[in-house]
Image (cartoon, rainbow, N blue to C red; front, side):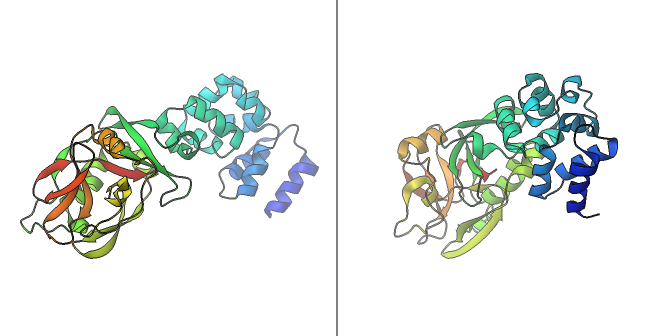
Length: 299
């Protein structure tokens, strides 16, 4: 049976006032589909609360009594029940009315998992995520950078201090750097599995000394251009300025007045890489010297 036939049968033959188990299954299957039309239709059906309650075995008397999306949204008890079940929350976040309510009640991490970070957070906001088992602050520095309806987060303060390149070659090739490897292994692994999956793989412009390349990474080090410094004679252009970085004060705030590495190489000296100084300015140093880690990622 085609979707048009199912819709016609439900709306005319079966009616929408009292659904059988089969009807509710059709509603839930429609919600779980990737078809916006089906999803929208399902949320508009009477009995939606009972259908969700039964399908996910939530055992919520309050939710079972909700006939419409509006009734679900008006009940704090019901919204609390929904947000405590990740699968149900993700499903309900597809509806604009329910998404707005979930934003009010959900934790920062849950908001990101629901794909609602772009709606809730603005540039400059702090987002609290579980990192290495502890609540950790990340700052929103841009919206719609490489991916539409996503935000770019960077850590508020350095998360560690490492050398940009460990091996003896001392090349300022970001693609094969210790920094890049560290960000996409050690740093990434300290987020929850759910957040790791929610982080977008982003293609960022970088350089191997003087050669432009693109790295497709979950987490990356910011560039000279991305922190609002543009370019210079020995500085390659890598990306565009993030909206948050308007002055040295923002760069100082991100690093908590500590030095932190960028991914940008010096294109005259093969073993030098740029970093942010304590005062928010930038200069270069040897890739074998230690510096702070400030990860960036889209989610």
